[in-house]
Image (tube, rainbow, N blue to C red; front, side, top):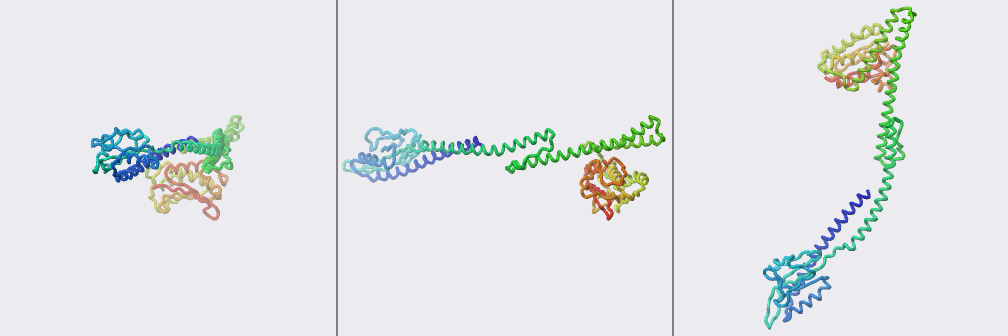
Length: 456
């Protein structure tokens, strides 16, 4: 900040001094031109038998009031050369070191005035016609008056004041920079410390917002706190997910290990039943591992998909038929109701769409008490699938979380599938450009309806 202030002062000072010098030089030249014209008019009115002496005395008298550094009467020849006035006397010398070669004397020879700046000297040359008496007769000659004045720059007095003012401004700038630096750097150090703790794994670290007064830095701290909170929540979700997966793996492994040891020891009373339990639990483990791998591929975007025009009722009927035996074993009614638009087509992968319906039906069988209804058709012009069960329903606080991995809500005590079905549904529907949501309750006794809207 001090450097910027110094640079600004330097530029402003140089520009100001340059403008001041230019203005004063121009003003001096303008004033001198006017004075030369007035003086030439006065000299023109002089008429005497001794004009030279009178004019020299007049110029000498006016030198001090006009603040002239030099004045002289000259005659300018047609070729621009200087000559003594009245055609007699020594060759004239221009005042204040003015050099004839640098003056526009050719213009003066033509009867026109000339002015300018030569170094630090402003000059004005004004020609005039002088009439005087010589030997009893009137004589007219072309003469010129040359006035010179040093141009005041004011640098001698301006520079010290400029330096004093600049020093005072720089001192104030240094003080302000120090205050601002402390005000900004201390919160930045705190933010840096918090981000370092977060990077080191301490996701509970937060920025002390009360110690930050700057709105922009407070906004930065708020963003960092929100990021840390999101990471902490994500880590908690990952931890809960691992605990849930561990529980899901432990249950079938315990059954498999128990019956396997019974078979090994020969203590199993029903060998066929023990083998059947081992096979069923192994299939359950295989399904869980398969669902975990599939969910990982979906979240990473590495799964394969071949979208095409698919008949929506056909995909629904295939999924429903596959779960009819499971529903019969559970004592549940599984109905498929195709809407009036039986030829509804959607743009989707046929296998993935069937998997979506299968996972929704599987979830409904977990919660239904008597019946599950699958409906497919057009709802207000949108291709829609509805899977409705008559279970206890989903609490309002649980609705936002039902499509997360291994979410378990109020159930009937049965478990069909792995608990990853709805999370896979959400990823598959999203990949097909559709939307999925849950509506609960759907009746006085509860119930849940899973709704899928697909692009046509």
